[in-house]
Amino acid sequence: MYGSDWPVCLVAGNYSMVKALVTDFISDLSQEQQNAIMGGNAAKFYNLK
Image (cartoon, rainbow, N blue to C red; front, side):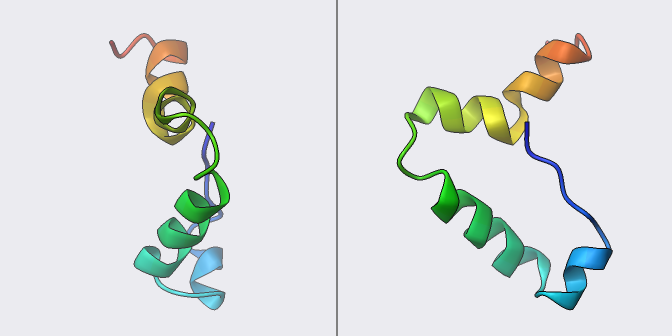
């Protein structure tokens, strides 16, 4: 499950830079795994879907 240290991560860069770093880091995973990390797991955990 993706999470950030917002707004502290602004010290490292803006939102686009931080998101690009995360998506690059998980790019070797399947699309299904990436989707789970970037929101699917949270939606499932909190019964949002």
